[in-house]
Amino acid sequence: MPISDSMRRLETKWKSNRGWPKRIEWLEISGLRGWTGQPIRLDFPLVAISGENGAGKSTILQAIAAIYRTQEETTRNLYATQFFPDSPWDKIKDALIKYQIREGDGARTGTLRKRVDRWRELPPRRERHVLYLDLKRIQALTSRPGYRRIAKAPNTEVRRQKMPEEIVNRLSTICGRTYDGAALALSNVDDDRWVPVASFRGLEYSGFHHGAGELALMEVLNRPMPKHCMVLIDEFETSLHPRAQRRFLREMAELCRRAELQIILTTHSPYVLDELPPEGRMYVMNQGNTKTIVTGVSPSFALTQMDDEPHPELDIYVEDVAAKILLEEVIVAAKRDLVRRCVIVPFGAANVGYALGQMVHEGRFPRPTLVYLDADQASGNGCSLLPGDDAPERVVFNGLRVLRWDGVAARISRAPGETIDTLDCAMTKADHHDWVVDAADRLVVGREELWRALCSVWVTRCAERNDLELVTQLIEDRIEHRSGATYPSMSIVAGLATESEPSEALKTECQVATPPGGSITQQDDTNDVAPSTKRHKNLFGEYDE
Image (cartoon, rainbow, N blue to C red; front, side, top):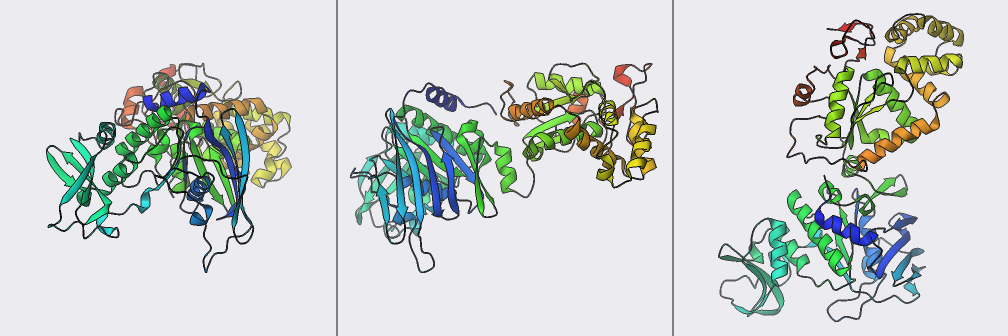
């Protein structure tokens, strides 16, 4: 979805290179919870770190919290020993936190190191206000030590401290309800434990009756965040519904911009990631015993990594399954990781592609979308062409024939001589759609199996590397919305493309019936058929009626 105004203003100020005189630029963690010195760059003042449970997200926040010290009376110092203690089961040794901080125009590097017995800092830690909040550990008031006795009916309120109107307004915006006011109150039986109290539509209720999300928000918003403060929030989305998560992050972006805060948070929520620009999204991947930091991930990529079900980030429409297989092999050869980030859907006749391309051009899809036509078609609004200068079969067959089909026989486990003769013979047929059908039947291999083998060899032996990179660059640009197109939210656009096949609404929009998801359709070149009514032939050599 389009970036919010709050995030856009923050991004604009950050890119102006004015402000944020205090910030951490990078850190490396070694010897702690599986970290082995991977560089962690913080290239935006508001960063969300995502990843599976146990990936090491909280370790990053805790290491950052230990880098600074504070002498302010309202904030207690945080130490590495609090976050990384020795225990009967754990002995921390040879641990290192290396970092670089920016102060004004100068950069300073430093370390926190524990070889055996104690943590040592070199040079001494710099001063900065640090606010560390672990929202998943915020308990209901009745579960906190000393609070249960406060809730007993005979007790009374003896003191009240009103929350500033600005905080009440933020709370109202995030929760989507207008609060009359909010305060912190003390009872006659305990002068240390404050109880939050809120008023809504003339009714007042205390934190003993707040929901978990409401209580967490009041805890966060009421904390002092002075200028240039470091704010660290673990499990940012805890107990908040998606709309509240988005609003909470937008409010934090506004605070970040105004007070030049550096905010780093952890999350499992795609809604939180979706609010941030690419440089503010980070994913921690566990690959065996190695951790990898990926910056700029999309929400769908993160969700796919954390789920057993795929969540593609980009819909790509192509004419037929032959084009789908060719495009898959192009992506695999140039940037394999992009395959999991896309779903490729055949649409049928070229005129369907032009209709889809027009919808892309007008920004009418609910999420990033590309339309590819075969290279023998004319380009159109919102459409791109596959590599080559002709129909995919002609491009691949002609290119490999020059090489005498070198590499194909090994891919399909057939004798080289038989493979060469069969493919040469297939090309004598007038209709190029019959070439794969004829060759596969003679070689006794699956038609899609043969076509994929041909495409794979062509991509690695014949295609220009620059052409392959142009395809993957376009895909990456569209995933990150760098094409300039905007996409309406899913709540506005309903009934369009699904992840398996175009929806009925999309079919109606195109005025052409889309073939079933499992069929392979190819356009017939018969010249006496109008482009909008051409019949289609699949890889089985049969026309779809």
